Length: 429
Length: 164
Image (tube, rainbow over all chains, first blue to last red; front, side, top):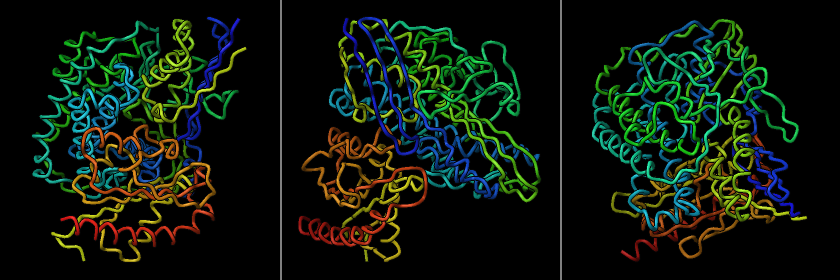
């Protein structure tokens, strides 16, 4: 009987080394080992001894694609420790910058990384030759998100305007108004995106997942809410570590997150959507219905539709925030450090991002813990591959590898590098 | 001194300041700022491809400086002209971003959005572990790269002007 091994190695600038190892004997799957994430231990150590005010800018460096998420989780954790609540226009501006990050991150993933998989192109470059209009639309959508982040965050790649308590400088009404027309275009383009991705061919693949996301009394979640699941979990953010743990994995230096005692769980757009469909704006709900997905979607390949629905949501929410915006009197509320521990969790484009800091009376960080979404999804991705691969065991090697990569890309892991970076080793007995 | 009518030349240093040698491009641009190079617009960039495509829009000439990993001796400086030969993407694999420099260049080519002139300086790195420290091989070569970039800026400027 033939035995084959699929081994995919890749490296990444921020997230460390990673790889996928699949071993098969004939049609039988023997082993799947996924290592796509290196925990941010360097940054946790780097934060020790630093002032609380440095956390937003330092943690923003962990990810080049979702710096806003790191800033938001860190400022909320600090404010939790200091007993500060940020409300009104400052709170709205935080949601607004988060809209920008979702738009740019989701547009990049939908158009540049995921759509080519479904359409049978090696990458977005090949796709652009036949679908130039779609690629241009994706780039323009992403740019709209970038511009929103730049306006509120002060800078495009690593925003520097976010601080504990609010911002260093807030935008004027006219600065925000200047984005209205582009956001209206973006909302239409996002609706068109939902229509477009709904026509892609999806493998039949549904799993009985445990979804975990934030849930807020009246908003689709960004910065605040309870942590809930479709199995009845409903906890405060500060109790995260009572319910979730990171396990060391034998085959790598990576950590796998579990819902205690040992359940793998699913975070990100699909989890948010399934747990918060009723909190989506009418236009986003309508786009989802028109695309033929109900309030619950269990096919991870259709995350490309849900991600597109979330672009509609983010554009619509941004327009709502801009419409009612009245600049606050001060760009930030006053902060008085005190000793204690603070917890923050916000919805990064890829799912919940948890931060916890212990601080002394002067606001110096004594220790830090950061749990990014990719580490939480890792175990679920591995389980998907275990279920998914046997269905395609007769598929030629190259196509099977492609399908594995596509299945991993369903989760938009930060390290989900394009096929250029993947190396394949084939072993036959 | 650059004026409104003079050619728009962009020098983009790419990298992550917390990932060892990956920060090489950023260090070169900072050195050029300190040296007062004003014949070009100096930009520090993460290297995210789509944002990069926006950055170079409208430029007459672009110089990119990034760390690379090709197996050459650490500190080796590669000068590449991607308008003539596509970049070997494996060389630029140290990227957070699925959509990085080679992809940005090739997608721009497919969409007819490439800048008229484009030169890439790749600095061979050796240590991409988390940290702010450059390897001595990379740190040692940075002044030479800065000198070559200044030279390249002059060359591109006269090239653009002569073709107007």
